[in-house]
Image 1 (cartoon, rainbow, N blue to C red):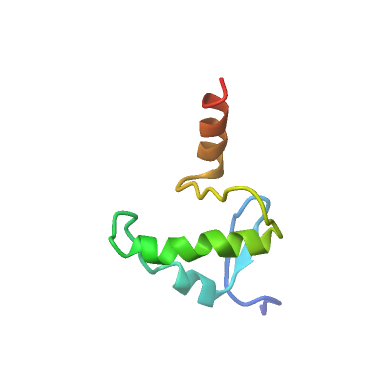
Image 2: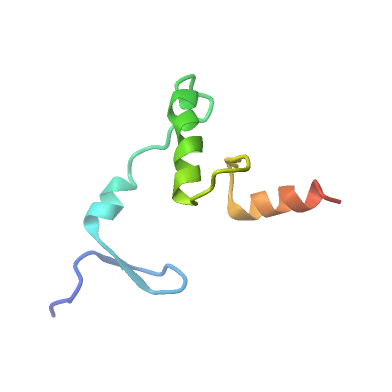
Length: 80
């Protein structure tokens, strides 16, 4: 039996989703430690780039090191 899309078959909701091997291999790299002293060098340029992505000239960019749910919870708790 041949498959149209190479890769492994995974349940990724909504799914199931076929994930190519090159993506799976890329995910086997360990993530960077957020306490690494080199992290500011990586993240500081992101603030300017994120403004470009969202075509924003005003406002403050805020990077939240957590899940989207965590960011929502933080925003709600801090406005109560």
